[in-house]
Image (cartoon, rainbow, N blue to C red):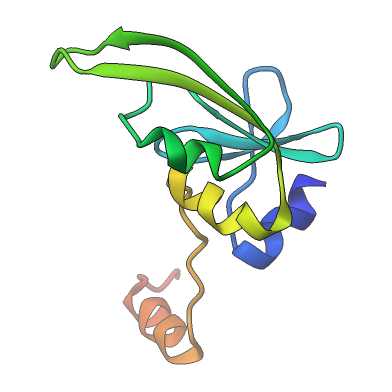
Length: 117
């Protein structure tokens, strides 16, 4: 299911420590549970609560602890993100897209590679 979600957005799918497929971002990760897209951020940056609430149906704000700089960083879990909010969820976790090269860019990069003899 996660592969079907990640393909049109050109996202990398990785396995977490449990062996589940996730889309990893700089702030958190996206995953599917029960056929619904979910988001999880542990010790993430401070983001306006309304941005989290706008994403999905079930919002859980966990502990807010202080980071090295003394700022409060929350734990966030959102379940049941609707299709219309997929793009916003990707932006909030800061997931990187796969690089797609044009034919000209590919030729330039291949020309830079050393020739194997």
